[in-house]
Structure formats: C-alpha cells, structure tokens
Length: 309
Image (cartoon, rainbow, N blue to C red):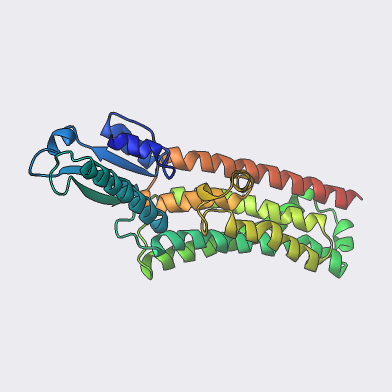
C-alpha cells in the first residue's frame, strides 16, 4: 500500500528494487535521486507499540532538490497514515516514523553545491569569452595580413591562440578549487589528478568553441556578443547550476546536451561531493572529449579558409 502511494504520486518516478545494496549503487551512480527503504518487518510493526521505520535516503549534492524530495516523501507518508486512520485500521501512534538521511551533503549546505558550479562559470569566461576575441582582434587591427605572409603553419597559429588561455584557465580553476576548499570549507572527496584531466577536457571544449566564434567573426564586439549569448548564458542557465534540468520542459533538456558546462557541472559536483564515481564521470568525460575534438576541428578548418582566402 505504501509502495502504491509512491507509484501513484505525480511527483515521483519509482523503480522497485529488492536489494538495498543495489539501491545504494543506483544512488551512487546518480541513476536515482533517493531511496525509500521499507524494512522486512514493516507490516508487523504497524500493529505493535513501536512504529514502523521508513528510511528515506536522498542525494544531497543539490541541497534545494534534496529538501524538495524529502518534503514530498514526507507528504506521501503522512497522507497514507491519515487515510489509514480514516479507514479505522489499527496502528501504532504514529503509524510510521520517518528516518531521513542525506548523502554526500549531510548538512544540506548550499555553498557545497554552488562553489563547484561557479568554477565552471569561471572557466567558461576564460575559455569562451576571452578566446572569442583573439582572431577577430587580428582582423580588426589589420595584423592578420602580416601573419598571412609569414611561413607560420596553421597548427602553429591555432596552438598559439589556444595555449595561453588554456594555461590561464587551468590556473583559474586551481585557484578557485583552493579558495573553495580552504576559505569556504567545501569538501573535496575526489582525486586531484582526475580533476585536472577532466578540467583540461572542459577547457579544450570551451577554447575550441570560443576560437570557432573568433574565426567566423571579424569584429570583436560582435564576437563578444555571440560568445555571451551562445556560450556564457547557456552555461549559466542550462548547466543545472541555477535550475534543476529535470524539472524543465523536454525541449530544454534536449538543448542542454549541447552545452559543455552541463557535463562539467556534473563532474565537479561528483568529484567534490561524492568522489571518483566513474559511472558518472566517464560518460561526461566522453561527451566533453567529443565536443573538444569537434569544436577544435571546426575552428581549424575555419581558420584555414581564412588563411587561404
């Protein structure tokens, strides 16, 4: 009866498992947002003096989402208890005692969720907004013609425009992580090496996107506006940092998959809050690697056309 209440609720999409170990694995892999654990003696406890225990375990990486899930679960159980009493069925008082537990962010502190996400925005600013101006600046200042007559190779030009901002972005990431851990006391449970590798993938994807904009537009002002509209704003609103993407319309969720920041927000939250959970990290890393290859290849081809044309 309790299980049916969760099944019929419009606020939950339920999956039934018979093993607590399997449920814990699903929660670790972010395949579910919470666990409602009913003990084997749940039914018999309803008629005893001791109320039956219902354990609700919630993924607390997003503190606001955790509180919402916890509140809706409590509402389902309270409504079930009220209906049981209305039917006159015997039960202990209270019939059910809820035992909430939040994983990964036990105190439900919002800064533990916001600080890792802000690192993504800082890297986006460096990777997209600054890089979007580098080639356009050459055309606007008239120095591209001087570059065209030099024996510089296309790959040298590409690396010369990307490498300084890659180093700057990684330094900004490292400083942000240090500030978050030391000053804001945000826990970091993952591996530093893993963070560096995955941050480099995100930085390459951002740099490739910014360089593609810069290669396609010859005016710095226009390139800056495009980078804000197509790069920074989607990273802010469609990455899951400000809004819970699962509560947005389906079309918004589909569009968000082309935003590199979406994948790095998941990576940073997982590394800070849960640790090296590879079933979460690996798909996001593959998505960032694919985007990095795609954007850098398109930027290379675009710069090649400009140099040859």
